[in-house]
Image 1 (cartoon, rainbow, N blue to C red):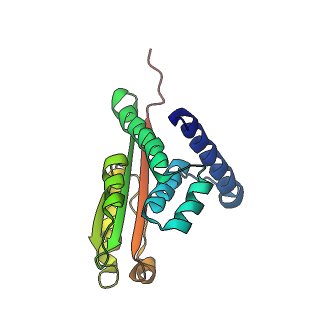
Image 2 (image 1 turned 120 degrees about the vertical axis):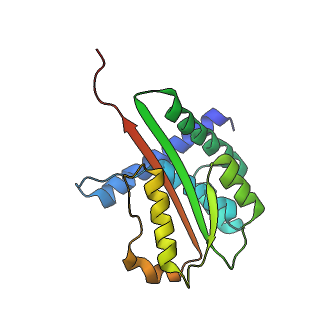
Image 3 (image 1 turned 30 degrees about the horizontal axis):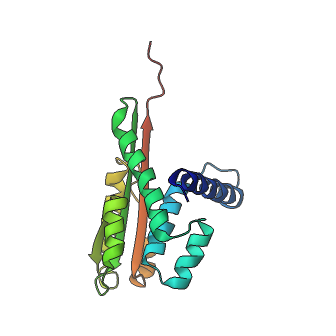
Amino acid sequence: MELGQSTEMQNDVMVLLAKHVIATVANGSNFVFSPMSVNLLLCLIAVGSSCVSKQQILTFLMSPSSDHLNAVLAKMVSVVHANGTERSDLRLSMATGVWIDQSLSVKPSFKEVLENSFKGNCSHVDFFNKPAEVIDEVNTWAEFHTNGLIKQILSRDSIEAIRDSKLLLANAVYLQRSLGRKI
C-alpha cells in the first residue's frame, strides 16, 4: 500500500472518530479534541501490544502493519513540526509523552518509534508511591507543550486512579494562528 493512500485512509479514520466523538460526547457544547492525537496514541499502543490487541488496533486503523502505520503517522508528525516553523502567522506544535511505572521496562522497538517517529519522550515514574508527583509532572509537561494554554490534564482527584496505573500516554497539539489581516 502506498504512503499517500495510507495517509488518506488515516484521514478517513480520524474523520470517523471525530464524527463519533462529536455525536456522543460534545452534545452541543464547546468541545475540542484532536483525532490525530487519538490516532497517534493508538499507534503507540499497537507498537507495544501483543498479537491480538495489535491486530485489532491495526484493523480499526485500516493499516496492514504497525511498521506501515508508523511510517504514515511519522510523516504526519514531521509535517506538523515543519508547519510550526515555516509561517510567521502560524504556530503549530505537537508533543507526545509516555509515563511508565518504574517496575516495568520499555520495549526497545516502542522507545525507538516514540522518539524517532513521533518525537516523543518516555519517563519512568512511581505511580503507586508518588502519584501526586506524577500528576504534577504530567501537568507541567502539558502546560509546557501547550504554551501555558492547558495547565491541568490530571487533577488531584485522580490520585487513586494514578496509583493503580502502569502506563500513561499523552499527546498535546498546540495551534496559534494570527487571525488579523495584513494590509
